[in-house]
Image 1 (cartoon, rainbow over the protein chains, first blue to last red):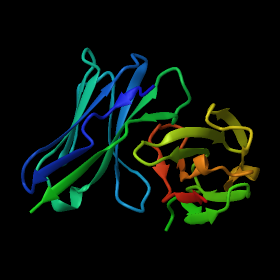
Image 2: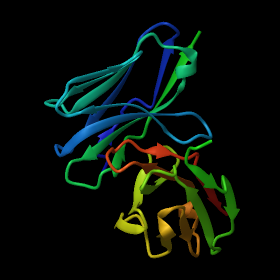
Image 3: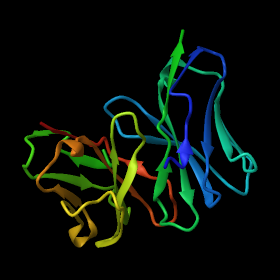
Image 4: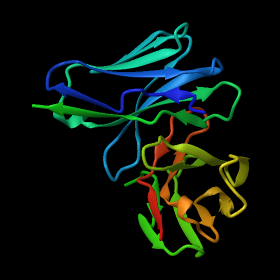
Length: 114
Length: 113
């Protein structure tokens, strides 16, 4: 069973516009959420995270929003750049499980075109 | 380069053969993880080490899989009697004790013919 769901396998955005990547989860024990970016032939790279005690975390062009009641989070990239083109994975940590044991979604392929 | 290092990067083997992957984590990280990623899926947890102790194993880690981390430094993941379903990217990650943010290596891709 997929506890972390990324229902959009792909997203295409023009350079300079906002990219919004969405993620839903089902496990109410998740208390820490992360976004990873992955280029082809490379491992995932940590991008940004948010604790369940917050509803927003910002780092430069990247902002993550968390809606606990809806069990939904989103990653906003503003402005989008061609170098942002990659697969983005949403991941979650269960407060009752081992630190670093993450549950990943299937990923969303973001393409930013000029 | 002081990132997580994995080798080999790609291994092609015939069904029934044994394969071993190696991971060298970031030196000051005492927690090490193995994940597996199959086509169209996100990474899935396999096992976790704190220093040399293997503290958790996923049910995905069948009896044909064994992982070690002697001396709490590098780790190996061995798959015995490989099956075509073992074809995947095997990712190693490490992290300091205080955070759940994982630093991944580039992965070892296994193709079982």
